Amino acid sequence: MRYFMKFLVFPALLVSFGCASMDSMATAKSNADSLPATGLSAYTKAHAMNPSPPDRIGGPVEIKVSVRGGSTRWNQPGPRQLDPAVFGTPAHPVGFEKTPFPLVGIKPGMRQIMGNGYTIVDHATPFSDWLPVGEGSLEMTLTDATAIDGATTKDRVSFVATFRAPDKSHTYRVEADMALPHGKFFPTFGGVVTDHLLHGATGLGTRLMPTEYTYVAFWAKGRLYVDGKLTNDNHLVHMMITEGVRKKGKLQIEGGVNGVGRVVHLMVPPYKLGPKGPVKSPLKTGYLPFPYVKKEMMKAKGKIMAMPEGPEKKKMMAQMMATKALMMHTKEHVMHAMKEGKMFGQPFLHVMFGNPDIQVTHK
Picture 1 (cartoon, rainbow, N blue to C red):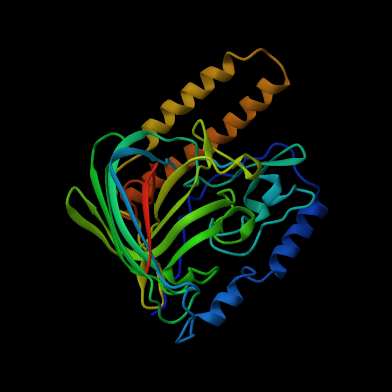
Picture 2: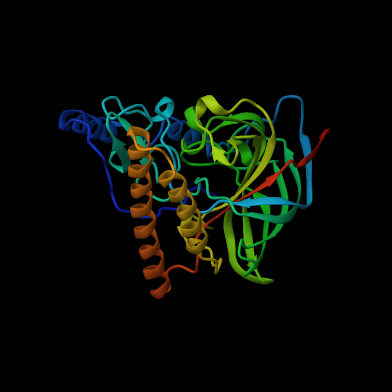
């Protein structure tokens, strides 16, 4: 059975400050239209029907991870800076593979522009710098036995995480128990992978995260419980334990990740897993992030207003106004979707747990 990974989309208002030349934008569009879905798409598709994918060299590795009552950071939807090392410039854009946003690439038309460079994505993303602090626990036992994608896998996933909403309105439990043997736009390495680089410039996962060393990651089928009630079954669950990718809460670009720290990223996007792949199914979280986001934006505005007059203050204020427009449109979209019964609060989860205890056994 095939299962493929997708992430959420938040439609948003295009806001740009300055623009690239029409010729360069037309060239970027032409280049994007001529590209395949992604460089790894054909490779992964070719492996998906392999009935006997190779075993991991050196044999299986079992990884046990435990976090009990640890601190969490719940990533709120918001803007994400576009790294020129990954996305280039309006005159020379790169990193725009044709994949569902924000799975791998970001189309040039979805990039906000200021002067000669890109600023932020024109959609709210799961990779903002708004991170309310909470508490949570998780237990997992993972087996990395299969080296690469195929029709079957020997990889194993047993995962349970519990945590609360930032406003303490709800409690959550995420479970995962079936490794996904192959991906679509990039490999899942049999469902579990150890000792690898993901994201950023690698093309393995969204380019909105920086390139990061990953101790272990999985893509699996799972479920979400809210306040003890099963709300989403047969759902896509992605987890990875990486080196630290933030400094003082700010998500870094390529040059800012230096191997210090360790963090668990738990991502549950709004897709359930059907027999032919993912089907849109927003999480029924019941949590609305906008009061917290508004508070954080007011704090940021206060800091900008306190700055001395000059070009830097003007630039920061322009960025703030672009973010405000983005989030106002996002809120309108979410509230309208909720009234229509198409959304039930924040439709994705991206929760981070710090300093996990990792135990590795070579079988």
